[in-house]
Length: 507
Image 1 (cartoon, rainbow, N blue to C red):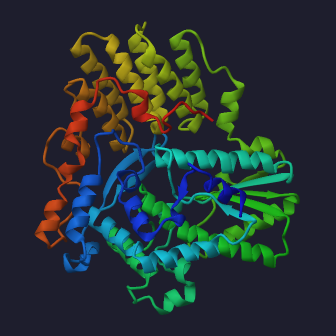
Image 2 (cartoon, rainbow, N blue to C red):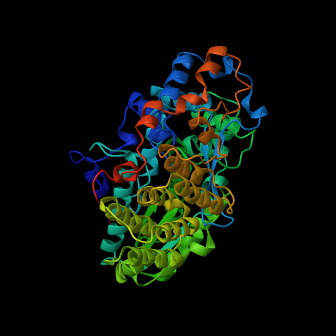
Image 3 (cartoon, rainbow, N blue to C red):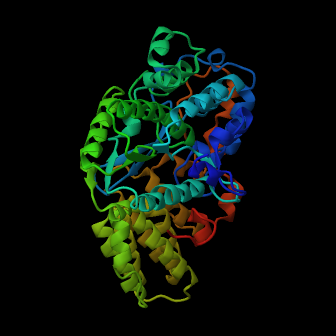
């Protein structure tokens, strides 16, 4: 039993999806947190809608209830998330619920689930390459995302530091645009072997082919790329990456390299060696494996170092640890974070630093120079869009110091105008609305989910291909807004509403 496996078997430890029964895996995938794994305000919930769709589809094949979805545009719904405040963005997709439920049902039949989990045993046979990105379920009452982040910290960062005593060189590599590059036919190759998959390509009962066909149905028949934004697709990506692991370890063995260790978290690789030539050779072999799957390494993020401990900790985190992190003066404290965000935009350490700042301001009773503080927070958010939930929480607290509603409205409107200068800001609008709606501020947003929150009738998914009227009725997108939660939303966003961990924990 590996060190990682031992950790997962401790009482209260997170549970790997690979240890679940088919029925348990189905329940796991149909949770709101699994369907949509990016941060949304708490009143956006998908569980009830997925439940209603699953009830209509119970015991039925989707193809008997619909036409071919691949002949229609806009089947999935995309929330655009800016990555850098400029022109890079990540399209986060809410998969059409009927296709999502259908795919979950296919994957989690006892026969198919058994075949998939057995295949992962093959992927993970090598003790030299550890895959650490398998979805986890929290068993301590926290969020599943917290379990995965805790696993990353313990099994990637901490384990990397530990391995510095055994290895003298560390090579980093990651895959360029991994989800967008995955060739859907390679899912069947991964689960069944390339030869069997190709010879049985028309056999839709083969689970690899069924997954391939369903994903193509979501994307107008495209075979390049899978949707990003759900735990289900994270798991499907692991099928292809696990296949790559198996191929890579075979090639490394054939090359006669034995003194190495690899940690992989999704598309991020850490290769430990004592001979730098071995590290370079392993990266070359990895490149060849990925080429065969239509993927390539990101050259900007690939390189090696003989300073293993230093390279085990991300540069933004090292910089934050070395520098001043706090000041008695609230604005100076915020400017310290602003300076760090300029050097390391959109980094995890910026989010952590803002989380701590939010906890501080949440307890404050009075503020000076509030408009200046809000301006600094908005500027941080502009360059670090992943920090926007916590930035929104900070702004919501600072606004309490402004008594005039018209002035609060003006500030939120100005923040919206500034954020609108960057492309693809749907995700940001959802959090701006979280501030304005609960405070009764009349700020209008163009993001369709925002319109649903306002009570407007609008569509998210194209369901023109659905023939069954009962299923169509179950797909009403207004059901994703929990009205009780929306009514209960307070003007000031509390730390627990945005925190990944239920308790204060910053590693």
